[in-house]
Image (cartoon, rainbow, N blue to C red; front, side, top):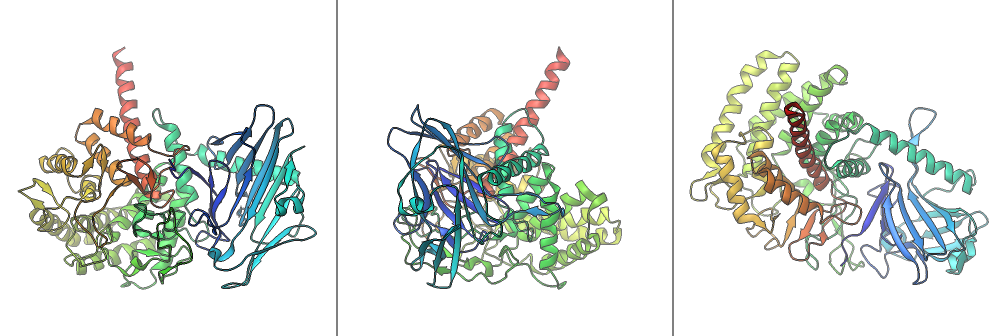
Length: 600
């Protein structure tokens, strides 16, 4: 079964997906949201890829170098063996910034014997919209297209360039390399330089990971998820991407295929909150600057999402020439959801602002801008919290009074009050408290349904929705409150399928949902843990972890029947929620250990 068996490599500028057999099947250059160079992931015939073919005697194994984003694929037939180290260079340069060029290095290490492989180097520029021609030049291989627009990529290698391009067999007699980049190099690469690039990149990631605390339980899963979230952050602007791909379907053969290579305020703020809890405050600092830069006018409403370079217009188009992942059309670029109104984003943003001030208040830059944003958010929430919206799941039909949106409006005011305390703005606290109380009373009166004994998806509805589980996480209700316990139990009964959760079961714009939304299962596990059902929570959590791919990575969705991964990949939402659950379990484990040692 195909389980999105890909590893992600990247350098906080772009990323690539590499299959468990070492084929680069997805890569956009020079940046995350650029058009693709390789898109076999979205069309096996014409998408383009970069792979190694060996005879059937070879076994292929793949793993990450621990605590790094370097992916190691080993090819061995017992006697002959070689390793491929895939990475995108990233390390500190002399000027104090980062060296992170738009290029992939594939370092080939000879292990034993005289292994042989055939290179299938087949770039298809600009989403394979037109013909890409490849030419062998004196120092490199150039591939170019004049289709939609002119574009080129360059391949440098220590192996015979003609043999590479013509697909002739190559014998590995010593270490070598491939460097595929968006720009022509000024200085000619060589194997020694590429080895140095690899070691520098490895050291960068080891140093970065060293800032992540060590946990007694699930430490490997937390570390891998943290690195994955870092790989989805874009240094240049501070944006955090929802995922590295577009149009991987929520269900095979259906049309729920979206482009996730953008910065959703909600997803990104949740990621930043978790990553800064792990001690990586640079990601948080850059993201806060991204937000400050986006809000020039005091009364300007936030969009729910932006391009990674702060673009506000994300027009959605379809690429009809691509057949889609496993035939799932359409393939979309851009995302029409950017025009939607979702009132929850203000609360999620205020939550992350408060968290940063609370943790790093002594060295937070831009305090005055942050206070201005805080006042602006309160003003917007005060004016609009009573209005209906599209909700967290981006329903494309009518607006409703979604419970999650109201909870996050309450959160916006609650966190604004806490920020006011930090800045000693006590006159604002007295002014904002009645608004917070008013929203809270509205939620308790209108979101609760006596018949189903739960807080429901929207006011006056009987439909359950996993997002209301976050009421407790944001502090709107206590975990031991009987209405929250009852809601968790009702959601388990209605939305859980063998421990995997539906977001909701009611029909939406595209029919009935038919796959499990991974982040919802993590939220559910967390909620079970919080209400005291710890053993059941741990059991569900361990089972959920077993559904990851071979490298511990998660996409957006999981198929209920086959348990295969579906949806865009790797998904920031899934990994941030994994970290939250794992930290809770680990803290509990640590507390138990301390109590045990005290008893001894």
